[in-house]
Length: 384
Ligand SMILES: Cc1ncc(COP(=O)(O)O)c(C=O)c1O
Image 1 (cartoon, rainbow, N blue to C red):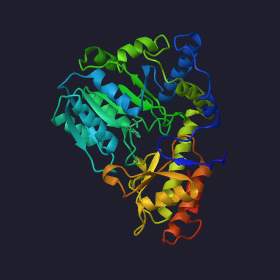
Image 2: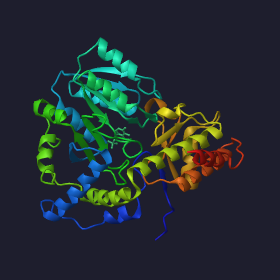
Image 3: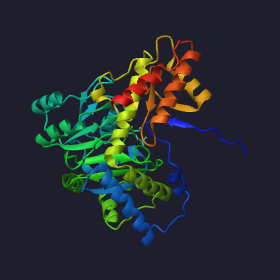
Image 4: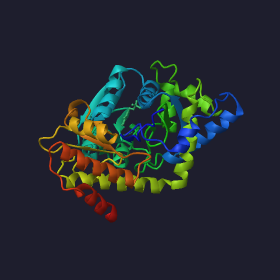
């Protein structure tokens, strides 16, 4: 058999997986109504509580991040209820669209792609319009690499009596997410992002107020019934047969993450973000998000240099160096590319990717002094 070349997945999920996680996925199947399974479930649930810094009850649903978003909507609401959705990229737009599909009355607070939400805009809108039942927002808008000021936005929503429903799918682990301290009512995450695990599971935490809303919501739900999932979670089970290899992977991932420590994981993502941004800027490339204070710690979107095609960069990086970069999404399709630095990533990988990017640009006819990006990245690392 031919030895496969190492692949470098520089996406904002799915992420590369550590060897111990890959091995764990090959574990034998279990009886999902038995005690061994319940122990596994409890360990994974404890890990989710630890990462999200929450005492709220959590549930885990088979499916992807979008499954969790759908579950939040179809459990908490009744048709016609008013929600406010912050829209600033493809995932936040998805959340708003989904709410409309479920018959909710959606008001959008929209921003240009690449901008973060401004707390003062939210305050003004809530003072002028409303009342709304809930605020829907994405913590880290993965399509544009924007990190929203979640703590301030959630505080304003709470003052105005709204439930805060957060898609934290690509922010978890990269940046602080103290769910209880920030008063977040529903927080949605997914296994393939910051969890060091493969796709297949969406995890949600719900505050007591959010659970009360589930009791009242009249939208139809069946496999995504959160109250049913909570009943089973209390017995360390899921209502339906769970994706066992994902749970086994999560258990192994949590062992590594607990060993590294929550603050250290966040600090590593911050450093990688700074290194990537510095390297790209040194190459004369324009970042989609110029202000580092609102820049994602999971992914960095960037415009190619003038005269170079974003898709050509992705192709050469993939074909010559086996590095997979993210593409621009929807209205940014073909205009940018995105470097993911989320999950099982480190300084050597990021420096290697920047070095290969230098060579790629050279091959595409854009002159680069070798070492330009890596030197700038090293300098950023020294300073952070
Ligand atoms: C912020 C955000 N929300 C939602 C999703 C959708 O998640 P999934 O593809 O797991 O359904 C993603 C995936 O990239 C995301 O980054």
